[in-house]
Every structure is written in structure tokens, then in C-alpha cells.
Length: 59
Image (cartoon, rainbow, N blue to C red; front, top):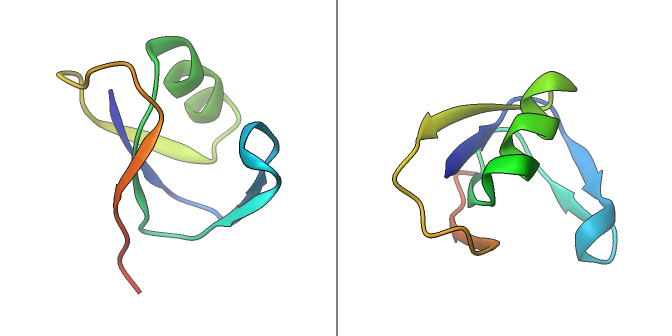
């Protein structure tokens, strides 16, 4: 699933990398649900491949 970061946060699952507002990530369904429940991200596409790869960054 693709998600868009809504609030800056340090990604505990990726060596505390800073995720910034507007960053687009592809994550598992479970991770997407967790981050949206925490109000850190919003789901923008459900067709992702379940890998955790940053595909685009908006600065």
C-alpha cells in the first residue's frame, strides 16, 4: 500500500530515519493501518506490493 506522511516522525522500523511530511512510502497493509491509526500518514493507494520502499520524496 502507498501512504503519504502527514506528520514528521522517526521510523523505528528503519533505523530511526526521519520521515517528513509529503513523503510517499510503500508499506505492508498492517504497517499502513498502524501509521494511519497513529495519525502519522494517510493511505493513498491500496495496490502496493507489500514491500517497504520509499518511492518518492517531496521536499
